[in-house]
Length: 314
Image (cartoon, rainbow, N blue to C red):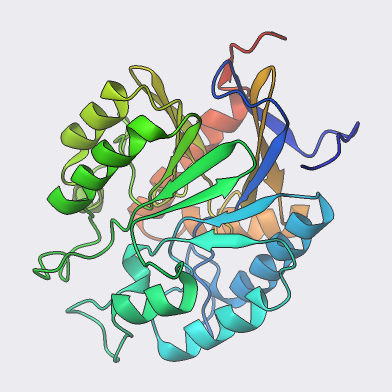
C-alpha cells in the first residue's frame, strides 16, 4: 500500500490499538464539503466551499492515500448544479474513492428546488451494486451504509438519519466474514453529550442503539462518521467512532486514518490558512446559536488533542 512518510501529516487526533492490519492502509476522510454554487458566508462558508474541497482532493493525492472516503453532504443543498460542481472537483481526484450520501444530498420536503433522488446519487457516486456496499482496501474492508434516506420517505422532513432494518440485517450478516472492518456512515452513532441543544435534537441516528449493538456484537474496531462537523471520538464498547471535521466549516479540515501493524493513527489535517480559519470562526460565532455551539465543541477538542493515545507506541 502507501509508502511510509517521515513527516507528520497534521495534528494527531488519536492513536488507537485497533484496528490493525499487516500492511499500512491510509484512508483520507473528506467529510461535509457542502459544496455551494452560489451564496456568501454562513457558518459553512459557502463562498469558499469549492476551493476547500479542491484542496482536500489535492491533499488526498499528495499524501498517497489508498482510498478517499466521502461520508456525505457533498453538496450544500442537493441542487443539481451543486452536484455538477462536485463532479468537476472529483474528476481531479486520482485516488480511488467511495461515498455515502448525507442529509443534504437527498431530497427534502423543504427544498426550494428539485433535488436528484437517492437513486441518482447511488448511480453517480455509489458502487455498481448500490448501498450498502463493501470495499476492500488491502487487508481492510469498508462497509458503507446510506443513513440519509428511507424508502418510506420518513426522513424527508428532518436532518436526522436511520440505518433501517434492512441495512442493519445486512451489517449483521456481512460482518462475521470480515476480518478488519471499518463501517462508514454519514450520521453519528454517538450524540455528543454537550450538544448546544435546539436544532441538534433533529440530527441523530434514529436507530443508534440498535446499530451500537450490532457493532458491539461483531467487535467492529472502527466506525467513521461525519454530520456534526466536530472532530471527536466516541467509544461504543469495542468500537471507536471517529467523527470527522467538515471540509467547509471551522476548523476546515480532513482526516487521515493510518491503519497498520501497530494499530491506527488518526490525523487532523488543516485545509485553510490562518486568515480563512479566522473568517470561518467569525462567521460561526456571529451567526446561529448552533454554529457558535459547534465552534465551542471544536475548540474543546483541539485543545485536548490527542483525544486518545492508547496505541502500543503511547
